[in-house]
Length: 585
Ligand SMILES: [Zn+2]
Image (cartoon, rainbow, N blue to C red):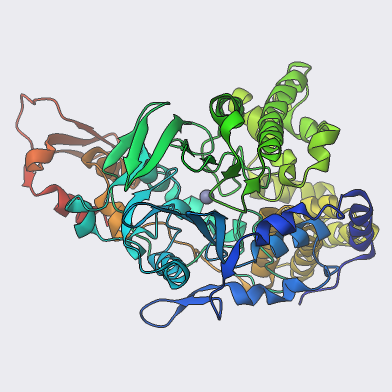
């Protein structure tokens, strides 16, 4: 059962209340500015009546911060649960509090252009519906995906149709490489990432002061129908201009930043700048804890420098695809400058310290941000954290090995745990000592040693209970929303067993977007090496216009080639490309 916050955690929270600038309430003004109306009740259901989004479940956040929640995270969650339609400037509107991400709508000559239609078609349709209630029944005349993450396109079929896009009535704009990256991020390691995403977003947690309070970037992910319509207009160059339904836009490419395919854009007629997900009201992830390739904070910072140079002196309002906008040209420049410095500082200082011989875990403890970055709310680590981002920079440049030969060939977790327990006097002795560490408030250490007990003796009931209690205190103390979710999810599984993989990132639309080579790659990843290493099979796959490929299984490896083959295959399969996609399912 959940326990109250320990005296040490309560003390830590008091310290934060005294040192952080809670008297600075600008964000609360910004997050409510231009409010036009909310969805009542704040609940979205799918066609079968199942709830796919419930913003009202966070109503408990309206009061004073509970002792079981970090006060800084409580504040961020209060801001994120504000739900409704907001005017950014006359002609540009946002629907916030309908999903992890937000949707922006720009009015054109005939209708409205939708930027980033959320994760699920149900939440996107509800967001468009709220907009129309207040702004009239305007048709959607264009869609823009700022980048290749699922929370920025998955709801597209809630705002337009494949027919309207195919007929050329609704152009869909996206950065170069969009579809390829949408698919590749989810295909290769998707199964493991989905399991870890369940931890990161607290998918199994009750929403309460002892449970889920939000993920810092948005409250959580919606669970409706995930869709995809391919872009019809590719944005490839910085300075490229497009006009959609009379709305003029100037683009800035930002590939390899927060996402592999990402772009910023400026609306000259509104003096408004969209920064995709590269300047939000949190320190973002250089490496998300669900797992991904490490991002490049040096390039990221560079794109913000470029955005300032291109648009800084002519921007009155800046917004991203999460959180609330920033108004006022001086504030925009200050905001972008601090965000730029944040990613550059973490990058440069991590490299400085690693060149002095420190390892990632040491740099993570030693890293202190400059005073201006410590004081700004939007540079605090609600989604990314200084700790795990520093380790990510280390990993990007140096890899998993820290240079200490003792760590070059360690036993794997269970083997290590068994040996640790033997050396430390057995499981009961370790649990007794860990209880003392818990009582002293050294939860990080208690978690480490109790993890050895649970790995060596998974049925040790007392160890499981104490480790769950320990994770819970670490969760209560976390300023980072995803850390809190991870700790509390760990406690939940220790107490109630595995919750499996509640977040699934694959859908029929996603599978249909696979290129033949990506289908073959995903098949190759599923080959059981030892069971197939004596097999030798050559198959030709003839996909008509989509090409002809030779697949070869040998040594437990499936490889493919589009080159002409001299020898005949064992078998030839002829099918349309769509059938191959269905087979991949
Ligand atoms: Zn996002």
